[in-house]
Length: 214
Ligand code: T5A
Ligand code: NA
Image (cartoon, rainbow, N blue to C red; front, side, top):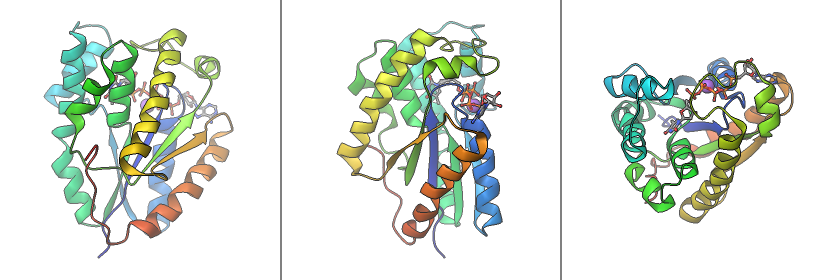
């Protein structure tokens, strides 16, 4: 039985990740693949509740402490993800370690430090990075409700995502980080995402799951 693929959607706040992960899971299932959604942060766990309080600004945390909590929130889910992949279930992740790096580095934490706690997590077979101008993002609904949802922060985060893309290529080769414009309609973005994903579904086959930054 071929393993499942690990497919990550990343992008700035309001780039349409949550809209598109739902559509991607539905499309995969319709095409005969088994697929499951995993959102990061996973706000349902004890660690996730601390992250949720931080994002809603009802709690304050040191920058390093919240960085490590976001990573811990991925580590507490890694065995479930690995089991799904081994069982032939494709995991679609709404954000992953790359958001962790980009958002913390944008606050001024050292970039190499930001990479380290996620070292060894399951390596995404592909990351689809939804690109959107910060100005378009700000026009989409409910912007500004949570920490980080402002144009200055998003501009800094965008610059860090560009460094993350270079790091992914350096460690893991080309083809694992794919930019998809999110400026178009929901249907246009969905079509471009499927265009990138369908080849990955054929490619992963019996390849072992890789390890991030290893
Ligand atoms: N974070 C996260 C870290 O700092 N470190 C980490 O390690 C991780 C994992 C929460 C925050 O945590 C930070 C990053 C974030 O600041 P979250 O829970 O993913 O992350 O954030 P959410 O608020 O849930 O999601 P986003 O704000 O990122 O929005 P999405 O999911 O990108 O966008 P979506 O689909 O909800 O769409 C936003 C709006 O736009 C519309 C939608 O209908 C919706 O109203 N829309 C479109 N409109 C026009 N055209 C399109 N193509 C559209 N697609 C969607
Ligand atoms: Na979202």
